[in-house]
Image 1 (tube, helix red, strand yellow):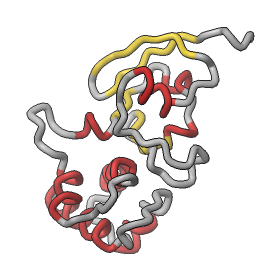
Image 2 (cartoon, helix red, strand yellow):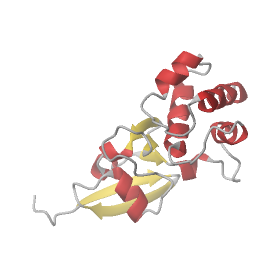
Image 3 (cartoon, helix red, strand yellow):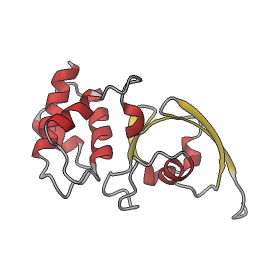
Image 4 (tube, one colour):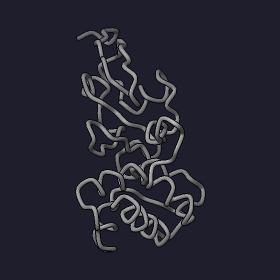
Length: 160
């Protein structure tokens, strides 16, 4: 395939369908930010270590810097912008992060929240150890994690 070749991609993002032609090497994180304007999906390390770029793809958390846009063809993607309800009401995990001060600089927050949503999908009542393990792919340099764990516990209770 020549470097100028493009591949068609059709993806649902935050409830809206987008069709585009992308270079085969385009990462999902760059497609979301640069083509679709979903700038809440943060570019952190570009090596899939930090988790800041985490989104939900077909309901599961993925690091969008390690997924090609072409691999998302036909998928449903939820970004931090699409997590809130239609009326703008925060998702219980977003609300808990806000109320329990589970963020400082906010850089890791979108990925941390979306990873927590996926964790709570699989385990509605996780222990502190399970929360820490479930979020271990997301790095935070500011908070010390304690308020993040508390927020996930509060969100689990709110969602029960």
